[in-house]
Length: 145
Image 1 (cartoon, rainbow, N blue to C red):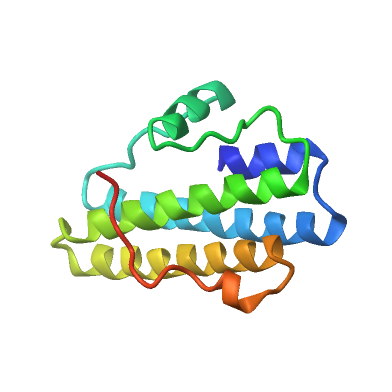
Image 2 (cartoon, rainbow, N blue to C red):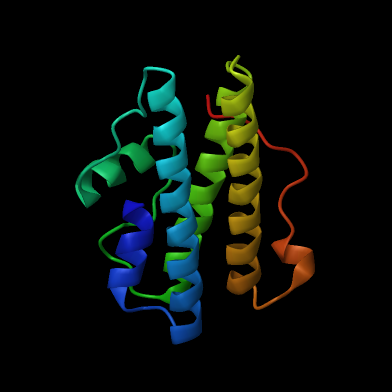
């Protein structure tokens, strides 16, 4: 969420791309609300999200994402950051799914992982000006290590 908000605050996006990013942020917020609701029903909660750009930058650096959250000067940088964040999210869901036993949570997590792959593809297609051969996601998903 922080990465999307920072990208929107940067002022570096073309208006149409900013609208797209706002739509994807809305979906990300829906994912969080859905997971909070389902996990709450199981008596647990989501891990705490970073509360500041600096904390988010530190977490991203731990996953080898080097694009700065606070120095986003171009649309290219913004899209690169969001593509990297979507890759991390997709990998995190992939890793988590193997550890889930609740059928409802497993289904929700799988659906959200698919949405993250769609976000990645949309952002990549935007980054590459619609070049489909460059916008298609990698054929394999790997969890974070």
